[in-house]
Image (cartoon, rainbow, N blue to C red; front, side, top):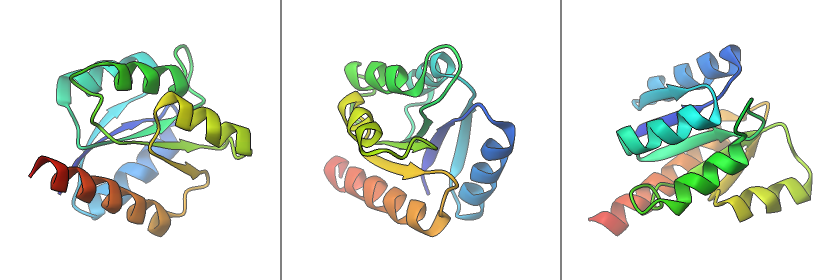
Length: 127
């Protein structure tokens, strides 16, 4: 299926999301802060990124902006995964370059539909 970069600092959330994605057939690359997420995006060029926004050091908003500002990674869809659920948080995530938004706790069926839509759309654009 797809290579998905999960940028998440909470080990429990990282483990749950990874297990869910692998069960669905995806390959998972992990990063636990924004800087590591940017480096992993450049190194692995994943099909999609799941980005926690409340990260230590460089937060997810800044990491998403950096990923979207690089010619090598600008095409990668980013889904924000966050506990920030206010409408202004959604707008801020969109402004940073996130293509979709999913609140925690994650509803996996809804997240899966977003992943399928974004990865499928990217494959159509590439193919």
